[in-house]
Image 1 (cartoon, helix red, strand yellow):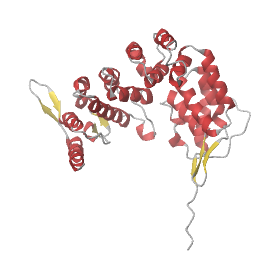
Image 2: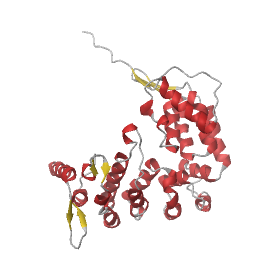
Image 3: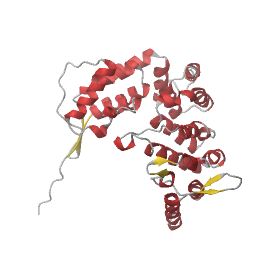
Image 4: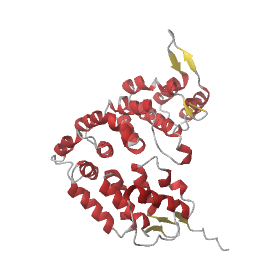
Length: 323
């Protein structure tokens, strides 16, 4: 334990003050990247922020280059930590990060995630698939549609299905169709999400109807996330229609949380560059004004119910102890 703690401290110091050094014949070796790889081999987990790769908030892309070959040769646990570092660096260097954005839009990082990141079936691949599914805008993954489809074909899995649902590459349709005939996948949620996102209107309608009819706040929130994953026009319109839901998830004596936050998160998953959909901008009613204005402009949404009283998350006061 003490050894790992010491290594973590050393890694932090190296990352925060690293500079590129000559490696012969004009090549540049990144001290920060090499130091990180070494420590990951020794079992140290990535600890944000990636200061050795950021200069005044801007990403030093050349510092990342050693991670490409490392992702091809290193063991799964090391690859996983490299992916976590790359994902964090990509998010933090994005111009919308300080406004609440959670996007990876840096081309070299995306290329490594979609290339070297998924070459081995291990923890690194799962981390790369997860990072792309959660943080890379769908349009930036379109050039990798064939690669991601082939990955799903060779190594089908739950996160791979969600990623295909997000990107919606046409070439994935026959692959998902075939997988849905195998015993394992027809009832698996993420596989059904991919089918609904690509072609299966019956499954899409089933999820939309269940979402609209849901009266339980937790179930409504869960289904909002599913519709966000499906990301079809019909699914997104159903989410926009629910922007005035009055459902609240309540934990007695702890907190009250509006399900509108889950609706917003599902929409933001599909429109990650729209600040109006960020939870961080919901400081007052004006925040909901902006979110609703987006729905009106994008979908022509109209509501026949008034907006519920302002609520995001409200904690209950801790009762004082009496003597």
